Length: 125
Image (tube, rainbow, N blue to C red; front, top):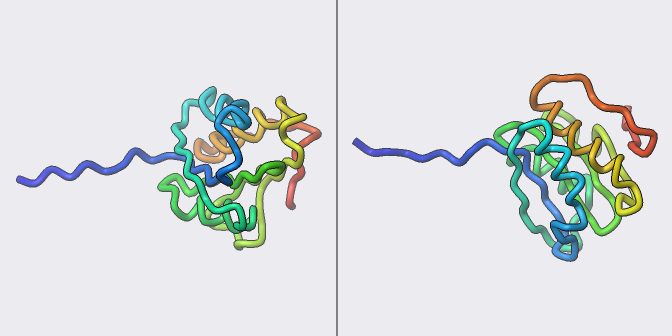
């Protein structure tokens, strides 16, 4: 009998190489507080933030992805068009509470719970 070990379903976060885990720690805390696992993967610095978030959502077994550049975070869902997003947060390093809310909202999207609101989060629709 062959045993197949499947990877744990996670929210996937694609980030540019110049973004450290410490820089997005509040995003990760927001996800962790909601009890959903995540994984971080590095992408090239020339990748577009919307494309990164869209590709992360398609790579995630949970259908939720986050794209992260040096100054912007984007939350996306697999069923959205590639140019669309749920939330965007610019200049996130100066908005720790909004970054944490975006992380919590990524996890809440997985769980089907209502989103947290924050004035720093840009809503796409």
